[in-house]
Length: 195
Length: 305
Image (tube, rainbow over all chains, first blue to last red; front, top):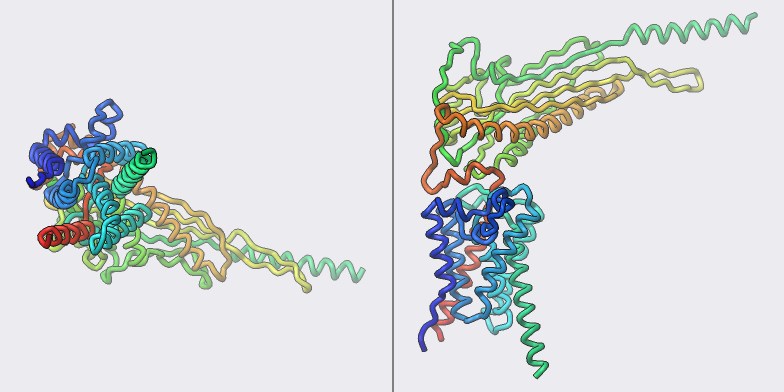
């Protein structure tokens, strides 16, 4: 049996790398509140592919490559839908709920959606993997909620740079994955039931 | 006849008592102040410092500190009191080292939201020598690797007027307790300097007026509390003004490129720095560690078959 290639994971990674090394593209794609309000709505989606520094890019890309590859190798369905819906909802949420945020960039919200999706599937499996997924999901959710409540990053001191974290993007990612997972499970159950 | 002369006597005694109190009415003033001018341009040295053209390397490494007073060689701020009776005391300064750190953290928190700020270092008072001037700033710059410094100074004046009094009627007649009306005027001033070029980039003040009342016994405590409130309010007002001045400074950078040079460190896109209010969605060490564990177990499990 031929090995499956994590196409979507590689495509997104390639886009993030190209945009980072071509600053003109970064300017065109970054989430810029004023530009979005003036009609450049593609920035709602594309802002997730832009990164401000090499450390910012590396952290997000390593996380994305790990999680995206596992999802695609496990052939979990509707991964592209998860990527697009989480990107779009992150952009919309920032626009509506973070009026003081003029610029935003980073893939971590989509990474949060992907890891939540992976862990929700993983919890349904057996053995150590199940417990690892449950622990990861609990840790990620707790950390995001605490960060959202306190308004600061818990790991700020350990990170290379001092930046303004936007935990809302992580929370929206987690919620998007949860909704998609529940929707797919419900429709699958209803289909089986109707048969 | 006897009753009426007794009444006149009592009225006379009470009137004399009030008259004595009125004559004892006093007003006092206490002033606590530090000055950026005294720190940067002390009288003992040549005050002529020619600023160069600032080269702002983005993202900026910023320091924030309260300037020490030039008056005391022991590094304490200058305090002047006048008009107090021996039983009164001018308010002691509410700005302890801890309070200064808290105020600096509030200002730093506001600056951190800007993507063109790499980090903000809070500098304890002990690092700044009185009248240290730019030589002292150069030492701090080398020690803490800073580009720009925010120098904070303050001026707090407390006026105390003994014009009010509380009167209690007791079994033996009226008991009058003298009281004070206190006004606390506070000004905090932030001056942002590019250390290398000795050029002031912009400044922003913050002011506050706290009106309070106290009795003689707890006057000192009340004045300290008013002083503390004054610093908190002035800091909030200064933060708002800092934001406004920063926005104006960004416009100035665009309009006068010959006066300020802006360069960027590798891996920093200066085009993102002009918007302000920037945020990053970033995976941190904790998340990355979780994902690596997850990935490592997945690979190990796959290999095991």
